[in-house]
Length: 401
Image (cartoon, rainbow, N blue to C red; front, side, top):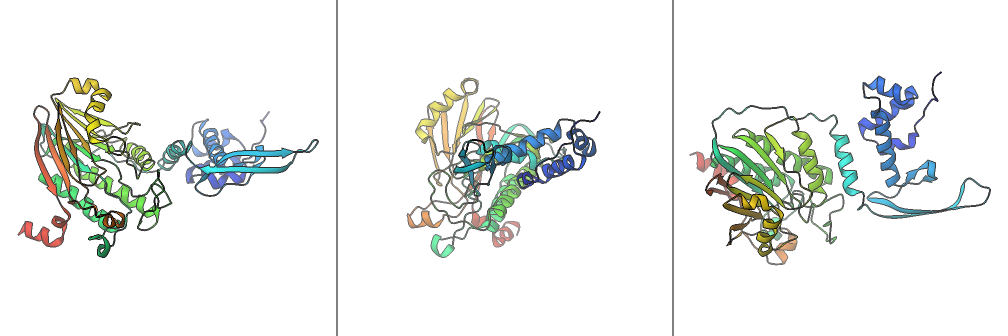
């Protein structure tokens, strides 16, 4: 005896990824979970799990026909609640009120599920080998902070132009320069220290305060450029280091963006044993290199003076087993360095051009990116710096002359 023949509501298709759509169409074609699994070469529970994920996503956006919810909410919103009026003796609803809000409670869960689904068929970075000799006791830290990929600045107004193409050219050029200027070391940390993305979603506003932002191009293009820059940095670092540690820190401009970028890069390099991604849900990060502690916080939640005690309490084991300690921060777009009892806090400038808001406010700062080399025994032993002027064609020709 065969079981009941199954059919999935085609209205769910609009909430599917490409792979999920393939699974749901297979269920309808073969009229069963088992048939779909066999046809697609999946485990027996995979189609059911895919259907469950799609139904959850659809419900978040107000679509669940079995509960009389057939009208989806506007893009960028989720269903906050529903009120349905039924009349005695009638199965169909008489009136219905749908309350919506911006997606907050389910935002991270939706992002994670989307990244997992999108990455199912994305080629992973293959394991690679190192063709050079490295200093086993050294760790290079290349800091990318407040890059604001997707920001737009008009030079006549702000003093320098900044857009997607300039960001990709200057940041990848700066990383290449800093890698060449640093010793070949056992470890390289690509420290993306927050505000990597200028905006956190389709709307060109800050995620917390809702301030309007000057943005360049469509958000999909911003995402593509942001991924290319960071992946180029990791791949270049792999050519000169035995292992690469990737930090994708939360900033005040990319609270959600830092989440999906972190999970995406964890999946991209899951088959490359020489790459690891710091996985922390808290916006305070730490890496131990022998007797040297290297830590990070974007700077949007705690002032510099509060960071030493916070990191001593947050990472007591690392603090207690090290003799040289450094905390890196950004956020304010200018450089500052101060030594406290037992730790030095380094505030990094940005290589990005200031936007109209900063220009009209009269805020000026040097534009730089740095690579700091740390010894496992002696702490900081070298530092390299690059500014945008060094990345022009004339500057490159002068260096090679």
